[in-house]
Amino acid sequence: MAEYKGIKGFNIQTVSSDPANPLAGEVWYNSTSATVKYFAVLSDAWATGGSLGTGRRSLAGCGTQTAALGFGGLTPPNSNATEEYDGSSWTAGGNIGTARFNLTGAGTQTAALGFGGYITGGGGTSGSTEEYDGSSWTAGGALSTVKYARGGAGTQTAGLAFGGAHPLSTATEEYDGSSWTAGGNLGTARSYIAGAGTQTAALAAGGGFPLGTAATEEYDGSSWTAGGSLNTARSKTTGAGIQTAALVFGGGTPSVTGATEQYDGSSWTSTSSMSTARGYLAGDGTTSAAVGFGGNPYSAATEEFTGAGPATLTVTTD
Image (cartoon, rainbow, N blue to C red):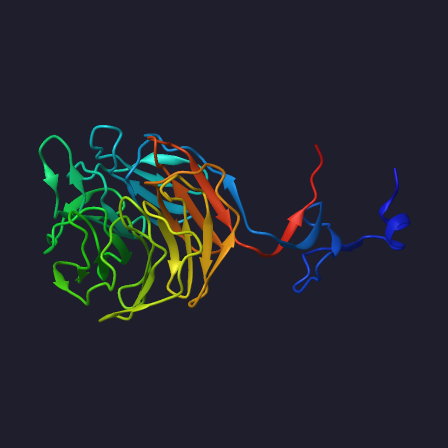
């Protein structure tokens, strides 16, 4: 077997700590960890994560890739299950008070907001808002515009709800931690929208039913303006990130898709597709570390997205 020196003409450098500013392709031996490492520029990719305990569709999500929250959904019937993700596995959290599906989430794993949705069995559309503290849900102020399948963004104390059904809506509402007030209307009425960002810098992409749209709109805290259109028009999709660095993945075209796109504040670029095409899923995170979970038909599958960029990797042997 050829040795590294025979191939490259020099030995691997031995260091006690990883270089601060390595070059692409640089290789070294870290004597402290007793590992051979190298520096590379990686492509974006999806990888399999830990499965949900309760497979479901039309659930809500929020948080980050290593501290995610999934709640509600349709199993069937309506689910009140809440689960917390640590980057590798899901564990049960406190049940949401009103079991429902097609609800929307915002915030973090320990300070989440859940609102809207639909209750089968005669319950109909819900205007209920609930707040999660990392262990239990409590009632918040009810939505003024009672809709399901809305887009969402922001935090528990500065949330944003937009669009929804039924019928399709342009309504936007802002949450201050206790009550909802009207904001500026969307330019395009739609439901099943991917949302991202904050209350004062939000993004709405895709949506519509039964056919999807490519329309993207940006919110500045008072009004929506048109942004760059998605490459793949879709509905029943989800989003992650912020207004100037967002992801949209999954959905229906109307056929289910795993297509993933990244937004830079003006235009969308196609990236690696999810391994499992699906709609009615939930997701959260950033453009460098996102997670998608659940979806039709009553899926427990979780996938993790890693964005393109430089990384220090460890050489392993089988």
